[in-house]
Length: 116
Image (tube, rainbow, N blue to C red; front, side, top):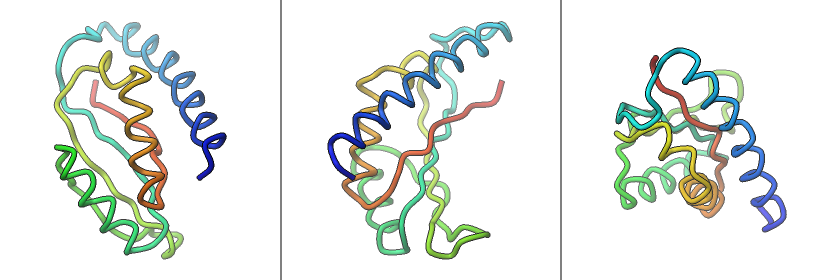
């Protein structure tokens, strides 16, 4: 992924996060409250998935899923969880860190989610 693609990906996540924060607040959820946040990635092959798994664990994230996509065996679904607030996970710093971590491991950060 080129630097230009990385920057575009970060900007897309930040725009999406602005909308997600509005939705979360509209449901009466405190953006500063810590909760389990699921982090979603797509890795380009098993080797990339395993490398991403190690990189995530080294960065302090627990990996809960690393398996091939049900529709495309060349893609691997990697999921991690972190206990933090929606406010924290939507910061530019947090997003850039995950986008770059994924890119360094032949993967893409696909976004995050949490139960409301």
